[in-house]
Length: 93
Image (tube, rainbow, N blue to C red; front, side, top):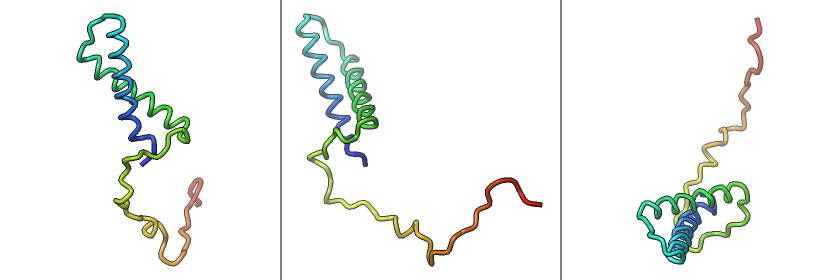
């Protein structure tokens, strides 16, 4: 799991709060559909930043580090180190 994935939720909530404060400051009515739009916009922004600049996001403090992910590296290795021949190019006649 990329470290920026949980931050998408935080970014969505931050956008919702900032939009709510801006609408209250301007004296406008804040609609309920706007909450969903702001959350999606904040999540998309954080996802783009996470893909473009992944080192900016630290590990999320509430990560589930006690739950270990399965290790599939043993399944990816071939049994005795034998190489498989792969034909590249047109068929030989």
